[in-house]
Picture 1 (tube, helix red, strand yellow):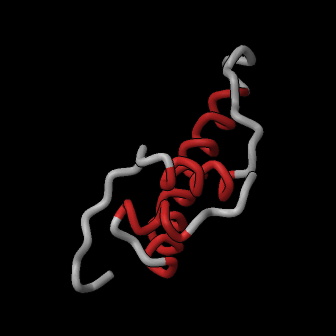
Picture 2 (spheres, rainbow, N blue to C red):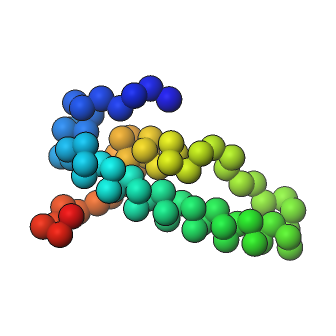
Length: 75
């Protein structure tokens, strides 16, 4: 994956530190979703599980604008 550009982050209204926080939270969400799918895999082997790295997938989704977030002072 290409290195994220600062311009892309600025378009989203994030600085690089906020992007890390948003991406980490989204990666945790994606990981919990994957763990649930792995549990169901024993019952139904036809379940398709995405094999990409969670962190890279989360970063790409944040940069593509697929992740909705709201800026707060506690962030």
